[in-house]
Length: 391
Ligand SMILES: *Cc1c(COP(=O)(O)O)cnc(C)c1O
Image 1 (tube, rainbow, N blue to C red):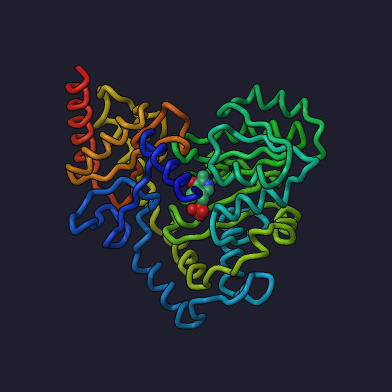
Image 2: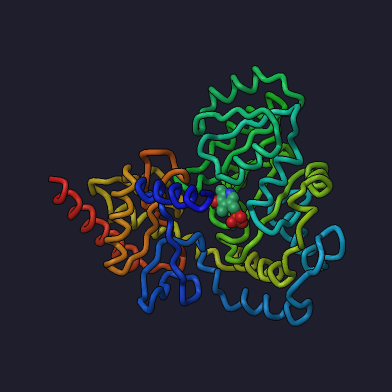
């Protein structure tokens, strides 16, 4: 019976067009990837700066592995923490101009750890409706009262904060929204947090390395600095490695270190990854052309699709979603692009709201102008063929 129950649930997912399939990549991450022996032009990764396979980063990892081995053998609070981790935390804090940073193994763990450490049952968390799943799960685990505010709705949030009688208030938001590419209105959010004495947690998984001077992230993009900002950056996207960190006021970082179960009860990430990130941060500073190129490619894609029937969502970041609506239609378009040798993922609920299935195009500094014009051409073709079918 328990087996049949699962089979029925899976069948139901299939009927709703929600079955997810993995592809097994046969090459390194990059603008061209090998799948089932065929080379595809890919617009799927979050490797925005094209660093995932950079020789200097690879070399830094190998060099650290020779000195420190691979496994850390313990959590950070026992003996897993190394001088390489310690130095990276200092480098990250200095890069952001924030007092202190704390490494986590993944962004998922960082968000859950930060929220549960900063908010408990007597507190309230105010969460943007389009926030990432890891923030939502962190809020649930915290047992705090939750107010889910409509996407970027400052009026709603202002009133909710004013009405709150909670002991402490925490506003949480993506910096750059992962499925839409828009940037949160951080100056206004910070103003509300100051007015209502709340923390502002910014999950900048898609902003760190991409927006702001030298890729210092979405608060820096607006020139914001405040001890109220609790910044979470992830290291598996623009930084091209894996991992995450939290940065903020000393008392915030120390509280998270002392209380976050996703920090305390897990093995420290390999030092070789921290060394890799250190190399990646140097490239943020030395190779500003990567961000310039991303901006040019983003403009080129918009230009290439202007006048097409389906429009890109308003976004100035390398996340350029084409909102399709129906799940089956989004999957069909993604499949047709794949037949043409181009990979663009169809993103469906529950990752995005019902009825807003989309092709999530993500650009990388490793793409060429020709890659982007090829994508625009193919998109126009598959969109036109769909229109003909529906006519
Ligand atoms: C990817 C992502 C995370 C999770 O980070 P990982 O390091 O991949 O676990 C958190 N928040 C947002 C907005 C993300 O896009």
